[in-house]
Length: 182
Image 1: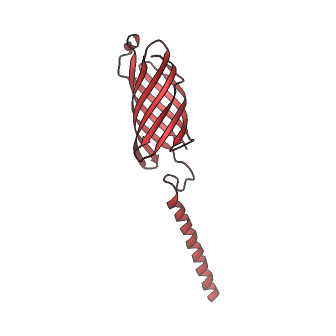
Image 2: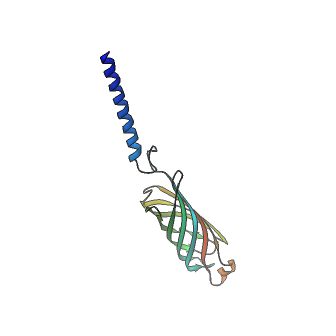
Image 3: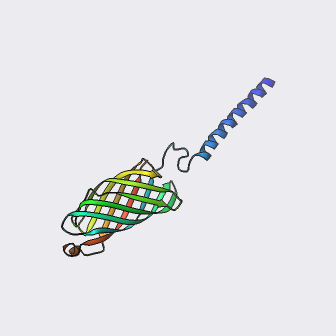
């Protein structure tokens, strides 16, 4: 009977030790990774104010693009954080009709202190009053490092389309969705 009691005590000790190990693993795992075994996707939605240098005209030319973006990012299920982005790109042939191969970099600064540096290496875009751009790339540094990125931009100019014939389009207002995929 004493042996049965000792076996029960040992079994309870092993069970409690195992439970403590499981709980400590969940407590010490980085936020967004407890129980998942990896990186959680980050999805950011926001608005951007962009500028073209030189302004877009009907004649294709190399153009520098800069945009300041304000985001709300979901960094883990049920957890959102404000963020700002600074996007810079160069389009070798940009006009009021199209933007092509505008590779660039965006640095996102999350209000919780984190950041992501994203290198955009591919884009398809259509302009003419409303620009739709599908961009892809990878996170080079910071939150989501090494993960694939999808960026969707829908822009409208604050100027008249007839400005393409004269002074050129100088900038846009855009809705932006950025996804850092797991």
